[in-house]
Image 1: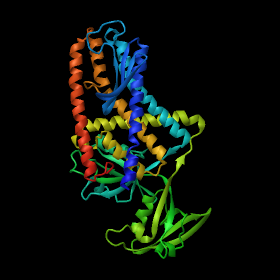
Image 2 (image 1 turned 90 degrees about the horizontal axis):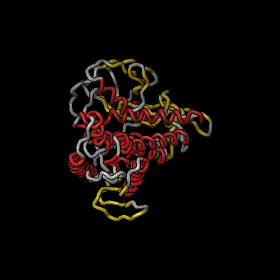
Image 3 (image 1 turned 45 degrees about the vertical axis):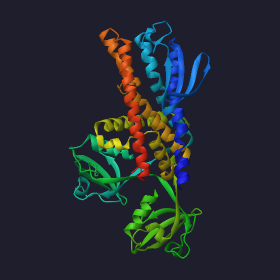
Amino acid sequence: MFSNSLLNGLYIIPILGVLIFVHEVGHFVAARMSGVKVEEFGIGIPPRITGFMRNDVLWSINWIPFGGFVRVKGEDAHDMSPDSMNAQPPHKRAFFLSAGVIMNLLLAIVLMIIVVGIQGLPHYRNYIDAVSPGSPAATAGWQAGDRIVGVDGDPIERTQEIVNVTRSRAGEPITITIERRGSLVQTTLIPREDPPEGEGRVGVGLAERTVSDVFVEQVAPGSNLAEAGIQAGDKFLLANNREVTDAYILRTELARFEGADIPVQVERNGELFETEISVPRPVTGESLVLTTGFELLRESAVFEDVPALQVIPRGFEEAIDATRLMFESIRYVFSNTESLGQVAGPVGMGQLTSELIEESTLPPWVTLANLAIILSLNLAILNLLPLPALDGGRLLFVGIEVIRGKRIPPEKEGLVHMVGIVVLIGLMFIIAFNDIKRIIGGDSFLR
């Protein structure tokens, strides 16, 4: 198990490698288009491991695997020769600085279009996994097992959308539609502005699930499941007359019928089969599903087919939605210190990759592609932040130059960015330490 988790986590290495390479290619091409000499194309941050010269450019691999860089002529702040960055007008320097971000945005859009075109679109459902006593959710009558359908009349699927809405609307009444065993219920609550630690704005735990077909892989001989006539390969359609769109619904309905018989409907070889399963009261610490006789359940994600002519616009639309959610999430991270525990470096991203592959019902390649899309958007947005050493920080200096009509001396700007680099490297090591601490402590990144 540990070995599989480690191997799955290693997928993050080529993903980050591609994202950083694409980002730096943007800077490289922009420099060449602007007539600026490129002196070094580096993967990682120095000190240097190795490098070679090609076409008068040093291509290097460096020890600190937290990024990459394109070093152009004129970064020493003194060289004002025609092919140096210092000699270029503001619009060319701005083009060079923004090119990496543009490439990451384009990569995310292209990957999304590929996923939509090949696999289609998955859909998600969000369930209320637990309700804290005395919370706004409890006051509104929410129950474990309910599904969140919409907010103020707009449909909603992703957990992050729900979290972002309750954050931005804290202190205001919100109308939220929930689905309870097939019936829609309109509820109104007011997210808390200062919630108790660990409870969130409305006081619920959420469980996001991909809409999937649920199959029986194995049935324990002599179990309650076997006595009900359920066989390996059966696909669950209904449980207690509730449509089974994922394993979470099946487990929830089984829990409702502890010590009783639950009516179910399954599909077997194209034919419908109805029966009742006797649900025992599980021994403390045992899984109700296993106690009932399921040795293995399998979920297969259901994808919406997208017509060929709609693949590009739908892929672009999905990428825009993901970018919007990413902006909101990053804004929250910088405005709430409690969320900093979810900031990850390469080590934490490896843990996240492993957990996503193990828990997702999507095909592994789709899970990895979606992760690459999110990380590419993340890299683009973070680099736009107006912080020293980042592309956004350098663009800020260009903007100041345009406004004041006079350039800040390059040596002073260089000093600011040098301090920024030192601070960023320090933060990276702190984040790496927290990532390792999380893994050693056995804590999950997703929960």
